[in-house]
Image (cartoon, rainbow, N blue to C red):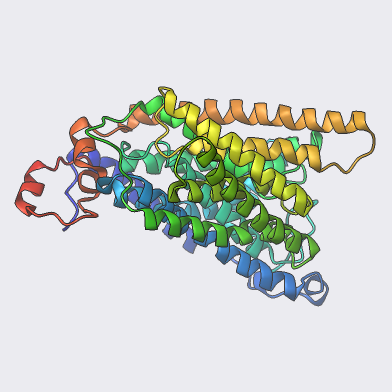
Length: 462
């Protein structure tokens, strides 16, 4: 079935977004790309390592696979009338954030540092100076082309806003989500990435915060922003028991995430080296331990061992090991996966008793998992000497978590508030009851028996 036509007020927002894309496409024609950008001199070429390049190309593809995996994971969890809309929100991030990253996102995250807070947007504007050379980010010694590094980091920028969608599933306007996704990436994600991963970033450089592959930048941040979204948008209007649409999809999504996470963590070593192997190993063991711990803890609490618990537990283990994957021992990775799974399981239980409608438990899993993983990383990973210095190291990480929580929650909540004044963020009650698949996209996951009744009763929301 063709998608519904947008109403006049709703059409304006799409015209604006479409016009922006046309403007970017035309502007790109006038950006001068020197012929030498992908033709290196002999001295610069010696800085590259072909094995590292091959591994990072592979890892980049693996990380991208995580976003479709997430779409299956989330899509199977929601009710059948919201499957398509939920999956589209993740898949759309692959396109939208790619353009945002190309225009200015990469510059804000890794451009020349402005007081350790954010990158100069002019440094890599529309990927200027991003080519085959490993040079370009002062203080960061690469053995891969800067273009490949930018692509690898892009995949992290893609999945972060996609993770947030699980909190406000089944009740957000698609256009409002797109605007939020763009602004979140520019105003929250890019600065956080700069704070921690840029050589001159304020948290990494001044406080010595270590985040191997995104425990703070990706998972804690997405979970915290998800909490803000769930609080702002309020509870869903239930018309019956929430029954997941498709458990096989959830399990498939979890397995794809597990597979793709090897690139997420292993690739963060930025080379085909011992650290990458260690990250690969620890990722698998933490995931396995957390999956088993979640299921067994459920049974201890007198619940049946479920496929949902198995899938969520596995993802929690992946989240927990992310901050320290390349540094901890195998035994520590198993402990991290186990203890984090138990804590997140309890957090989900508490959340279900509260009033906040975090639909797919993004904060109790990704938020809490990322925070616990970060604290455990500070405990287990320390490169200095002396117990007092180690204690200060842990305190710095706790401070960093608090700062990131305040900035991300406050920033995300403000974004929801501002965007809601521009574009209504929440769909109407009628649209929510019908389901976002039909009301937002004019499509259906299940067969519609009466097409005429469907067309008559489906409101147009833009």
